Image (cartoon, rainbow, N blue to C red; front, side, top):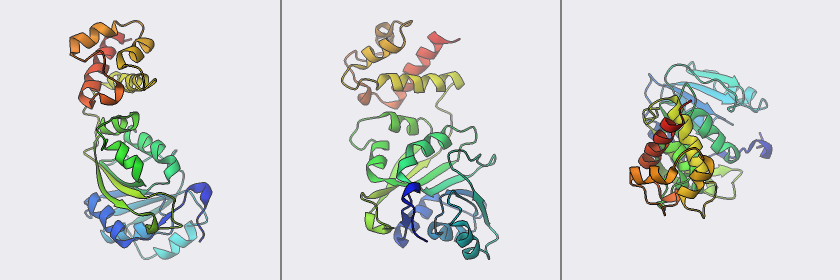
Length: 259
């Protein structure tokens, strides 16, 4: 079955990479796994061997007959045809483990981390540069890194070279694990909403100081005074602000903006 470029299909073929992914998931027979895009079933096979219950969500209906035939003898597989960006995940605890198409990485992370029914953890194979940006290896935060860290603890498990796929992508990949996923960092729903509004405003103009960006967005709040109250330097830029400070700052803005 030939890969479809339109669906961003790069099928994993590396056994060592598959082992790393499954180990990072820390799976037991009691777990439920949502696998997005099983493709030809290479990762699926390894997941099923752990005896966990696997929900394999595949958008490409040309692959479904192959998957049904390949895994006909497995009672712990539920094969679902559907789109990961509209699929309603399980309402019971589950782990999301997948080789995600590069072009929807951000959308997948956003949808499932912010969903009412979050996974307890995620182990995803993504572009290496994206994984490095999420864990902020250079010490610089981004909207992407903060959007992940506010829900869980990301770590780069290992790098996976481009030759580990068929067809091979043009860049290397990495296994990213996001553990302890929850909403515990937020005081309430409005705090969560204002957190994202605050970071988006903060990164709107990267060359400007954070205080200037936020003044443009929250015109009804004395942002400079708020920075003084919280001990935030007036010359700091968004990329240098840590998650705890963003959470404190957005909570203060939420309090002053409460409808």
